[in-house]
Amino acid sequence: MSAVAAAEPAPRRPALRARPWWPWLRKGFWLAFFALLGYLLVSQARTIAWDEVAQTLRELPLPVLLAAGGLAFASHLLYSTFDLLGRRAVGHRLPAPKVMLVTFISYAFNLNMGALVGGVASRYRLYGRLGLDEMQVTRVMAVSMVTNWLGYLLLGGLAFALFPLALPAEWDISDAVLQIAGSLLAAVALGYVAACAFSRKRSLSLRGHTFTLPSGRTALLQLAMSCLNWSLIAGTIFVLLQGQVDYVTVLTVLLLAAVAGVVTHVPAGLGVLEAVFVALLGTQLAPAQLIGTLLAYRALYYLAPLALAVLCFLFLEIRHKAPSRNA
Image (cartoon, rainbow, N blue to C red; front, side):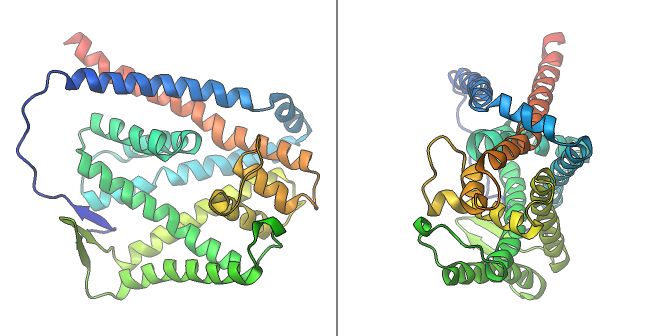
């Protein structure tokens, strides 16, 4: 039985005739991907007020900056192990360091460019180069997605239900609604773990694929890994704020920011994260201080890993092409 939720591949279809235009189309797609990657890197760098980031970083004590950087590093390192659960479910034999490197690159791309362009496309390309087929990659991604959002459901549910914040009036969301939503989120997370531990029916067939529940122990591991990762992300911001806002509030605001784009309009010129923090904490701290701190957080958690991920991605691309040139 599979150790984590996974889907068994459907029978393979007969191979289609070779299409001479397909290699050119594929190369064109990845050339466009690299062009988009470069454009996004440059455009994102231009949108950041680097003078504010520099000023904020200069004002941050070195121990605070090192501690925040350490928490950000720990979060990325932890997330890079999520695909190891998928490796166990799929049963492929790629070495753990290679799996973690692919996951790190994909996570950094996902944070900065979105799931479709970043996390999905890069995973298919990198894992494909390592010998996995599309179905295997899809199953690995599914496991990581379940792991990531399982912790969000529990932490967000508990935070919204037990520590509701005073929301802006224009959001049109009452405390009762937020508490009910929080209770439902937590119930879904706990229900998943309970189903994995006690359900007699271990698989579900959907559109030709069989989804197998993991063991209860594995589900608890998924939950623990995800909760810890979200806690490390919130800890990074908390440390940069130097204790001016309590940790539970920072965590709750961060989790609200993850869904804020669905329930409210974001002011022009601000990212979702910055807008939510300013809206909810602007009475406790000066908006300029909040934005400067969050820009520093983005530099540590988003841009620094992205720069490293781009270098790793290019290194893997060059190394992959080298043998074919020497053949």
